[in-house]
Image 1 (cartoon, rainbow, N blue to C red):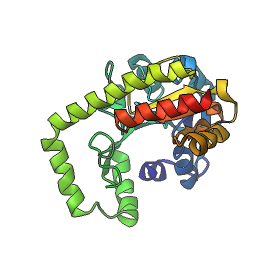
Image 2 (image 1 turned 30 degrees about the vertical axis):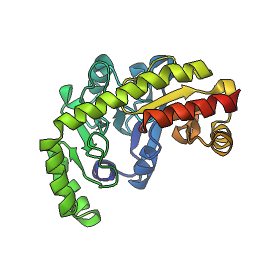
Image 3 (image 1 turned 180 degrees about the vertical axis):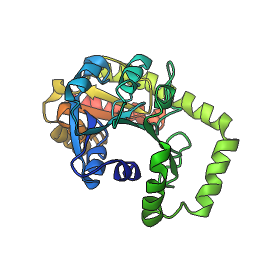
Image 4 (image 1 turned 90 degrees about the vertical axis):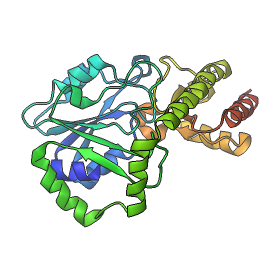
Length: 279
């Protein structure tokens, strides 16, 4: 992602980001001497952009619109209509940057790539989520041709290449894991279907049920307005680790991110502890 922003941005250029959104995005933009331009997204919309809000924020300094579907932290998937409307904004010097790292982890309907709607886009993907290769640092980018050489120069100086055993692992992942991936996705979905009603029963708000990645972004305002304090209290007293919403932006205060990348038994135990502590 840093490669993309370093190749795309001039100092002072803006990138539109959702609030809440993945916490590292604004840091990457700032590192490339750009400016994050935040657009609030809301629980009642499934944390999807409202295209009209993006249009209001567009000015001559906006160089890119960042999207992430399926999303971290929300687990929600951008609708086809919304993606098309955002893609239609790409013109002249404006591009879409699409983080598609959670593609393949969709449980209802279908996730879409931005390349279905426009060529003025950068796509970021990798092996860490769908192929469970977190930490092996193997990924790829698809970019407009005119940016490829600049990205190569940056990549050659910062990263050089993935090590050989990880490259072989990537080949094996692409060729030999279809059956295992299907089983993993089914397992995630089983956990998702367990966790959503369980959290609602405890008192968390989930207006639009997430259908992708392995996260649930739940409204915890019933239990207090300070998500960081609440997450620390839960960790220290119930021994359950959650991520405070404030880590993902000012508009995420009052929410907690739950991950179901764990066994069903551990998730059930965590819910029991959580319910007992909150009551």
